Length: 125
Image 1 (cartoon, rainbow, N blue to C red):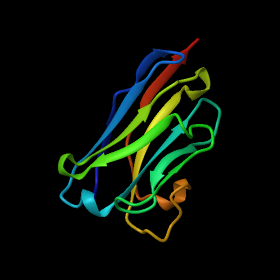
Image 2: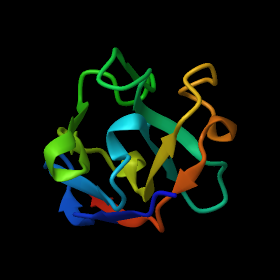
Image 3: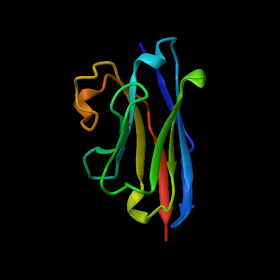
């Protein structure tokens, strides 16, 4: 069992930056591949970034490539999402997620076992 708590969301002007954090409970955090998704009002949950497995290659959604970076610190049981050059269309609730089955896709919500409660990011122009 893993519990995930996101933080770091807020209100930011277009072109600015935010760093989201996702703190995980449990001693088995290092066994999980982590990902970030987001959901804007009236839209489906969208893939943002993920590791393909523990400490492996990273994947990014097309809309965030070159602007967002996912990283993790296993010693702190935390995964991060650095978001630069933010745009109004990045406005959404951001969720972190954990998966234990590395054969599942990193980019689909169905591949993940655990989810955080989300943190709101609002980008104004």
